[in-house]
Length: 316
Image 1 (cartoon, helix red, strand yellow):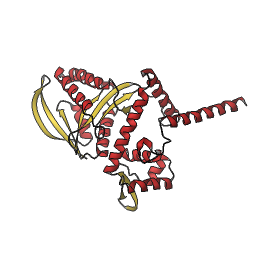
Image 2 (spheres, rainbow, N blue to C red; image 1 turned 45 degrees about the vertical axis):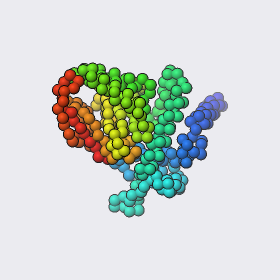
Image 3 (cartoon, helix red, strand yellow; image 1 turned 90 degrees about the vertical axis):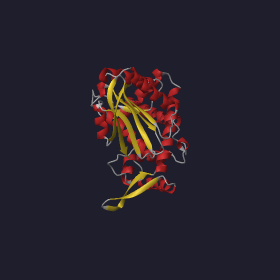
Image 4 (cartoon, helix red, strand yellow; image 1 turned 30 degrees about the vertical axis):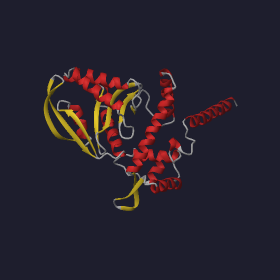
């Protein structure tokens, strides 16, 4: 009887938390994040925006991944098609099955919802002290791990997350670029000054609909960064890729670049360009692996060194 009472208490506690949290983050609203859609519709948009390039997002696969009833998903998709948010394409060799993808209009809508979700979450965290924020994130990670969302073997490290910048992160980007490039490549303080200019311009002119910065973090430790900024309506520029020495070889650099490319495609860019130097072998290897190609070279003397600047491009 005692064990039964304890079990009932735990069940009641979980249910009470579910009621509290769904109310707190506003998922009970009929129009989530000010959109025309409820939670399930916005989640479908999210899945399509983040769907792996090498997989086909058929309705049956999406339904299985989200645990949605096929008929319910069909109604959601029908509404998306009527609004011009989703396009369908017959799969090669099987005309009956169709792959789903966001249209440019759908990608723009998702980008605006994603930015609004980011801002609402930032506002929620902004009400807390730094210690409380750390406790909250740790508790959420624990819930996810216990319930199987990020199951790990005993003793293994928690997964690296890519997040939006917080106060202090831009300063970290400038500092680590200056320190690491001086130590590893012999660049002088003028390189750090250039990074500061780029970072300040990003903050001052940030366009939430088509620009992003991602910070790679594990257990509260920052491991890397990358920026995507607007050059024109169709061209984006990748900037300030950095991975801490202790985290190199773990796939973080590749993840940062892949996230840049995914976002650029989702908001309708047709090309990504970047500027690098020919002595940055590790970064150049990552760019080549992601499909970028060097399209121009120019010798110059900067940062106290004789260098060869390279312009790389990726068609989307």
